[in-house]
Length: 89
Image: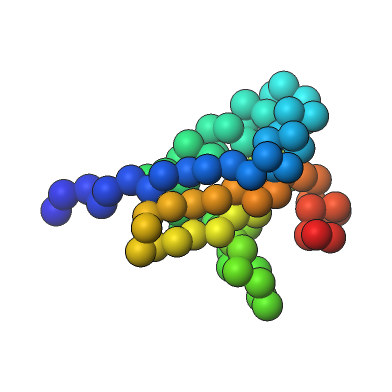
């Protein structure tokens, strides 16, 4: 069975700013997870947020919130932050 085509990932400017403020080790881990989303937008530990369009994926004590558009095969990273703050948007 051929691999499914990759998704295109875009990052909102606000999420980009949030990422740039993170410690380097966390930034690297989150960057790797974002790249992994290209080939698998719904990894086994991801979760659809109830009452919202976003999904979330965990990276240590941080969360990446993103939306998926399957018809256009795109993913948009909408927020990145500490788990206690990231959902208050």
